[in-house]
Image (cartoon, rainbow, N blue to C red):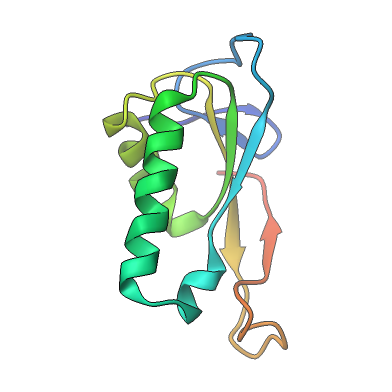
Length: 111
């Protein structure tokens, strides 16, 4: 799957946003999964999949750089061929004081 940069740091699965009359949704990697049981995590991910597959409005996902293509492929498998965008980030060092609460990140221009 080819992702194209449509604006500084914003990658698109398939072109520019399409107006559907729905509000923009921003999805962020759920760092709380580090603290929850596997059953709850699966239920939550199933609800997200249902939401993403039924929604036609734009979704911008903040995703760790090494997982962007995997997540884009997953969205594609859910039928999201349009209005799916990504801002990728790099995980910072494990010495960060926030490392126990989740990932610290910085947005960066794609290469």
